[in-house]
Image 1 (spheres, rainbow, N blue to C red):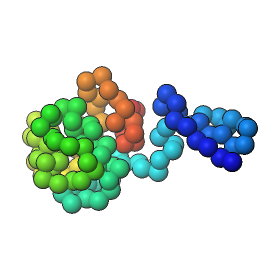
Image 2: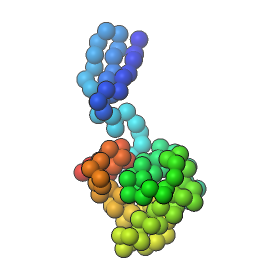
Image 3: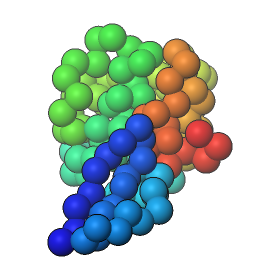
Image 4: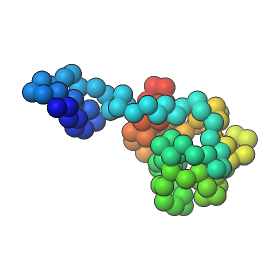
Length: 119
């Protein structure tokens, strides 16, 4: 019997009665979002949620964190881009990822989960 449990940001695997070494929570997911390009209509729900979580730390008008890269997410990305001197196209590409990956408000969790380097 194999069970897993998330504890304090670690994934604990139990096989039978043997406790396996804890793995970082990020290892539990195959989502490495950093470096991928996302735009209106993107369908990577997990990565879009990470983008939305990071944006929500900076922009309270984002709305629901629902994994849908719709008009509100595109508008929040555009506001982030304008506010940081980036090309305002509503697309999360390399320059926008670098900005999203800067820790904000003391929370690095969404950046770590999205695969941001150094987070």
